Image (cartoon, rainbow, N blue to C red; front, side, top):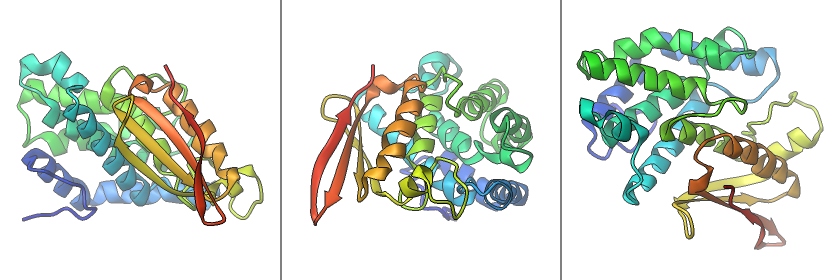
Amino acid sequence: MDINIFNLPIEGNQKLQKLVAALETEKDIQTLLTMSDVTAINRLGYNDHGPTHVKITSNSALLMLRILKEQEIHSSLQKDYGSFGLADEDAELVVVLGSYLHDIGHAIHRSGHELIGTLLAKPFIEHILDDLYVSEQKTIMVFETLHVIYSHEPNIVPLTIEAGIVKVADALDMEKGRARVPYAAGSVSIHSLSALGIENVEINKGTDRPLKIKIHMSNTAGIFQADDLLGEKLKTSGVAKYFEVEIYLLKDGKESLLKSYALE
């Protein structure tokens, strides 16, 4: 049975298929995602940190991991734990599972949610992976996923490609009305204006580097999250060397390159 509610491209990865089915049908996880939105939106007046955000992040992170693999840049999981029988296909589960659960700490509080999230996520991750991996493999998969969750905030530098990719993917959910910059609902500020300035975000194979992020804006206020927020996440991602960024501005029906950069 093909249970893939949020249209994640499985591409023959049967373990990933089972993972998606488990995530989408686990009521406690879905409740925690709803609670995360209650904390972020209802109680703090911030942007979405719930079901929609984590699905967008999961898709973006998986796409970036696969583009890297196409260019022979392999996951940290395969590099470090290939002797345990783990490979890039298993790293896809780490990226998706980490993306899907990275914000559940909001169910308790936004402050320190990355650490809270690891505590909340661990039993769910262990349960979901029970039928997919043997003991040593499962232990590695659990803690590699917890590393992804813990490392997604700007002040923590990831130590794996998978965690770095998820950190960047988190920031890329910035299209119109979906700013990753917290701002008070109804307020008029650079934050709220920026939230309306991004039309769409593209993830492609790069020209000079493996990955290219193209951000299309209709308002220069969008530069706040397209440049500042994404730039901050890239600087502390540990994977900045794989990315080039292009920011375009649409004005009077014509689009022009506003800025491009590549961090070391």
